[in-house]
Amino acid sequence: MHRSVFGLAVSLGMIFFHTGGAAAEAGLTVVGTGDGLEMLREIGEGFSAQHPEIELSIPPSIGSGGGIAAVSSGAERLGRVARPLKESEVAFGLVYIPIAKIPSAVFTHPSTGVSSLSSGDLVKLYSGEITNWSELGGADLRVKLVRREDADSTLQVLRGSMPGWEDLKFSARSKTAVTTQDAINTAMDVEGAIAFGPYSQPLESGLSVLKVDGHHPTDEDYPSAVTLALIYKDGTMDGEMEAFVDFSRSEKAHTLIENYGGVPVTN
Image (cartoon, rainbow, N blue to C red):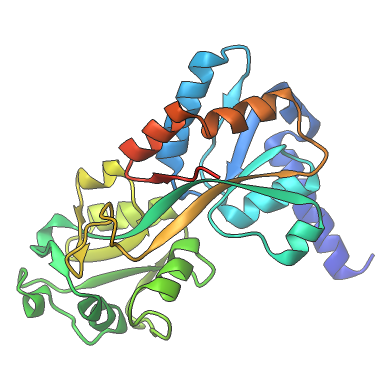
């Protein structure tokens, strides 16, 4: 077997093993991105209260790519993604159902003493031009930069919408967080840290969520947001899947999304 084909087979086999393969049919598992995870779990709790007969699981992040691989292979029936599907993925039969827009927030450890920055300040921080928070009116504390990998959905949104980010080259002193939760945990644990990720209300506890150019992530004029969507393979929709998709687009789910600082997608 050709090495690349063998590698794909092994990868898909590992997904089957990890998720239980056909055993996943015993319950409905929604796998994928860490963006909006707390919000989606809250939606899941509301769904389970209405549908106790359906065993629902929303596990930790395996990334949008992991969710796409799991659904494409048949290891799982529903996935969650924070990026649009590629043409090749749509051609393969994946169906994309947006449910919420989630602002892309920038947040710091409270020790920085900073609550609002300009988009220009952010560029200077992440490029390494500014290295101490005192340069921005904050504490006399070294800046600890936390970034995400190039394919991260929040970073892609920031590059496409935040002034100065399209061609931003990150400082070599920045740490790359491999998951959303890793970025959040680092910002919470490390004095002087700054990170970015999808906004959710719980970020306001233990972190300083920054206003950018005078706008909080929940403000209408805030420029950056990622779209959280469910995905499934065309022709696989069943009663359990349809029930969860319908609930995730219901008025009750819209209220939960808004409570977490998101914006429901209504079409």
